[in-house]
Amino acid sequence: MKIAVSCHPTQGGSGIVATELATALVTRGHEVHLAACKRPYRLAADSGVVFHLLQVPDYPLFRFPPHDLSLANKLAGICRNHDIDIIHAHYAIPHAITALLARQTVQPHKVRIVTTLHGTDITLVGSHAEFFDLTRHAMIESDALTAVSTWLRDQTMERFQLPRVPEVIYNFVDTVRFSLRGRAAYPRDGEPFHVLHASNLRPVKRIADIVRVFHEVQKKLPARLTILGEGPEKGLAQELVSELNLCGKVAFTSTADDVPKMMRSAHLNFLLSEYESFGLAALEGMSCGTPVAASSGGGLPEVIDHDRTGLLCPVGDVACTAQQVIALLGSRERWEAMSRETAADVRRRFALESIVPHYEELYERVRGSAT
Image (cartoon, rainbow, N blue to C red; front, side, top):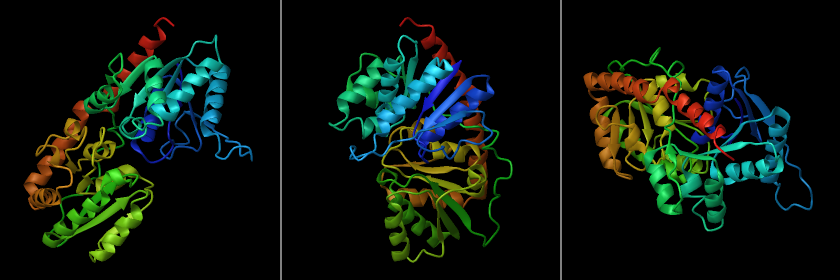
């Protein structure tokens, strides 16, 4: 098949999933084109995915650069020039809307649209009054609609009352790259535990809770924290680190050249969000054998089995999380057992080779359906 992908190129989970899916589809024999305003940071030069850089004109007439119209025009050109079968839009706004416009532009060429909902396109952007009608229209007019968790599917139906229920296809991870090979051993006496958080550092991630939990943990155990990512909460988190006298124990880094290596270097992964539609950062760490301490918000309980593959506490419960983390890290036997089990569980339920065929089956079903 010939597939065009539209996604956000930033560090968020939706862009990572879109990029990893595009790359996996190429290895399975499909021709894949990806359009974005910059190259997604997970899109390797040798991925085989054809990258189309979006050029957004800057005319005095436009108060704001017309990104969405430029994207629709770029997708239309890709469809026409490469005989595309499927546009896979990751996020309803703006990607599904621009895909609909591109499809209209290239008629009578038949292009099917698959839209994957990732979370804030429903819970935040799409639910805003300024975007609600367009978001609902994009979902209804897509030929297929998927959600990355049962929780997100249910949220979508509750908020938008759609005539059809989105199909749940979970996120996945490449278990060859994100593997146990080379993972950090349990620290020897006196050596610090390495705990990690990776995200786009938005308010929903509750970075302050992570710093406060770490503050309690390091009182009981030698530990250091790495916060990986960029976003609006970074400055506030840095201020809190300074206020709690943790500057020597907390490191901030914008990117990691080798994300699997970073995940394997950690003994624990934090994801204490207000909610996560799925929690890809948790999954990638778990695949490396890194247990995750997470909130029970959103779809995270679908990924994490409490006390077996990770730890779950109510959103905002710093004391609960700190207590459970200290107990886990304080027991070598328990930590090693959870490390093994969490990696095995990911391989059973979320491996790339198990999930990607669901998308291929969906594409075939959509392509064979009547217009």
